[in-house]
Amino acid sequence: MAISLDNLTEYLDSQDWNYTVHEEKNYISLRMNMKTVDSCSLILDVIDDTTVLFYTVFPIKIPEERRAAVAEFLCRANYGLYHGNFEIDFRDGEIRYKTTGMTTEAEELDEEVIGRLVNLGFAMTDRYAPGILSVLYANDEPENAIARIENRKKDDEEQDS
Image (cartoon, rainbow, N blue to C red):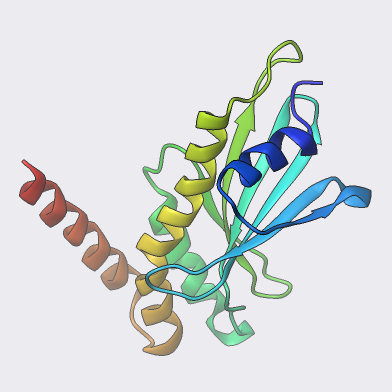
């Protein structure tokens, strides 16, 4: 078997992270504090022998009256992303960032790839959380919130060069 709960728990153990294995539904969950929001959850959902989904779950459910505006923000955020995407569940307001790990049945997903997929979800959620919060609580326009984040990205890149 190329991808299993055991592969994933080996990686999590190597990082000394606390987690819960849900064998009956074939997934693992854990929580992580971040710079911009507390306690994001991570769900590692083994779909089959070759596919695992990494969901970084935003800690605040979006109230129904703000879902359309936050969904617009997330659509704007998703445009141009290469290695994952934001999703919103219109039924309950849950937001998550999804990345996908894939391999063949003959190969395991190595620890370096698992680490990148785990960290990518946390990094993207941390990066876009200020915009989500400004749309949610300050009634900020989604376009303005994205512009601030993207401008910050450009400023950061200019400082790095």
